[in-house]
Structures are given as structure tokens and as C-alpha cells.
Length: 161
Ligand SMILES: [Zn+2]
Ligand SMILES: [Zn+2]
Image: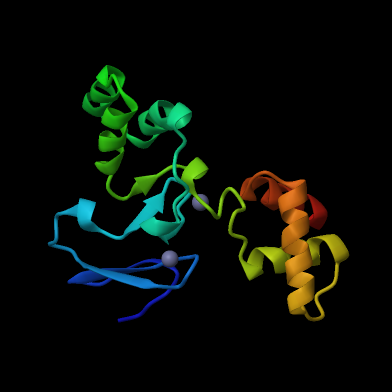
């Protein structure tokens, strides 16, 4: 079975490679219990082990759940929930979907070497070679200057123009 980052499918099973730790998750297409799956895919299209997701703070929980769920019936349950505990239970039912505020990649908690390299190339107009130190510095700079991966992408595109 061919494996690459993100979603891969053949007739009987699918596998996902976590974009943070490279762990492979394989699922049988007929397996229906998505709550047991150990990976999740975001609206941002990043695929990760569920363990890496950023926990939603209590005060954002309701809004975030409303954004995660697209089904009206779930919205009623979320709006009717009276306690944080009830909302946390609903959060565990969200299965394998998450939103950008939960994504370590989109929020720059985790920056890939590829992003760091693209940033250096855009900024320095150099493509020679990258030392560990350069990548580390670039990652620190990215975290200081930007709040999301989208901002970094906008910067890189603007540099290319
Ligand atoms: Zn992982
Ligand atoms: Zn993401």
C-alpha cells in the first residue's frame, strides 16, 4: 500500500500519516466507529493523531463546538447544554473533525521544516542549504511575527511577487 502524508485510499482500507509525528493510522473502510479512531482531520485539511490537538479552553468550548458540528440537531444539543461538563461530553462525540484553533500546525505550535525552509527562501532569496540552527531560528522568528500558518503563507506569497 502506498503511503504519503494525508489521506490515502485503496479498495479495502485507508491510511493516514500524521503530519506532525509521521505515525501511520490504518483503518478498514467498513469500520464504522469513528469515535475510536486515534487520528483526526481538520477543516484546514491537516491530518493528525488526536493526541496532538490543542485542548479547547472552557470559555471557547461552545463556540468551537458550534463550528465543528455542521448538523443542526447537534447545535440544539450544544445550545441546550447547561454545564461545561455537558459540553465536554459533546466534544468527545465530534469524532474525527477539528477546527483551526485546535490545530498545532495552523496555530504555529508545530512548524515543519518545509515551512521554515519556505520562509527562509522567501525572506533571504537563498536556496543554498539549511542548517539545523537556521531552521530553528526561522521557526522562532515565525512564531514571533505571525499568529497563524495562513499569515506565514501570505508573507511567502507576497515575497515571491
Ligand atoms: Zn502524530
Ligand atoms: Zn491545520
